[in-house]
Image (cartoon, rainbow, N blue to C red):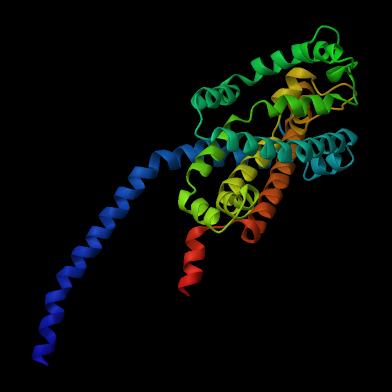
Length: 317
């Protein structure tokens, strides 16, 4: 009995010291993250909660706020302009998301090659991503000008009569898609980084096995690049549903609401019609749509995204 009591008495201070160390470590952790935590509560969580509560009210910024329950959401379901803006945004996303990823991946494959002056071309392609959105939209408006614009002048030189682009309801949305494709710099740089991270040994081994260029691209580049494709897809999807500048500056949502993006309509309701509660309800519907699409992509990722670490774990099993 005496022999067994001694080790317990000797270990007790060690546990106390460890518990004190853990408490100090926890306090230091919360002190370190407190600036971020305070900023998140004040600038993100707080405004989100206020916006959610505001979506159940009627408020024009000048008169007292009036609680209306779910009336704003019921009005939205009966609002024809809401459905138009939703259709325009979905059409734009269906065109822009796949085109932007295919083009940026294709250009990244070219710029990942070891050729002379490649840094210059990377800078040129990335430059639009850091320019002011309004500035490049104004430039594209001039390029799409029906009578004096550069694009129609080039088409005239080829004997083709150019459309009226932003003035025609049938072509305005396609013009905005072309305009938006100009700012692919962020996706492009991410793809180049992903391509640079693929080990050369994989290509050398595949070449020794007789794989051609397409085979190497199909069975090495795409699987190894799939985490980067997944990252870009989620990011571009979220950004696309929140597109605003191109339509607001170039067309203002016209002609005939053919480019009425969701956020353009939300802006009209919030600041032109001064319906803050209605606009907050629109914002929450957009949040749910983006969340659903993001979750859909994330859930599907297990079927097409290849993670080398996960493969290693499977092999070890």
